[in-house]
Length: 136
Image 1: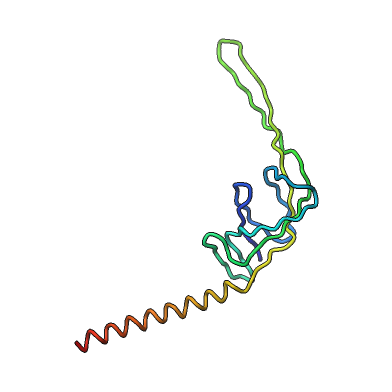
Image 2: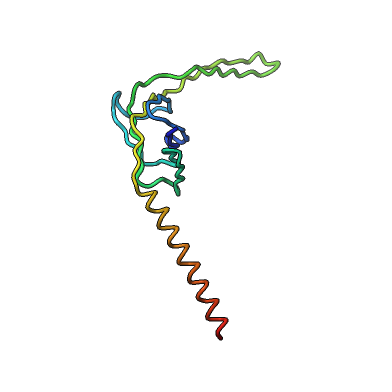
């Protein structure tokens, strides 16, 4: 399963292609395209890449589907023995987004290979230092 975890609107969301999800109101028009490069984690072809803090060369393309209001939250204030009570309500403004595409680059695979060669060079240097000490 291919998915990505992104940071958007102060929240983190796990997304797959074709998924529709809601976030707090985003200033944009309906059917606008948005491209996010703040991908925190990427799972592609059963390989997981974790960003530090973001995954390089990775982006998520979104489309604004709709602007709507969320479910009503009722607020009730009450003070005992004073006959005071007050009822209020709140409906948050939400934006509905659809994931069009999760795109990746080949860069993470090359970095993994480079890290392996760097670690092998470090081990070679350590072996050389030990041999120098043994001769002295």
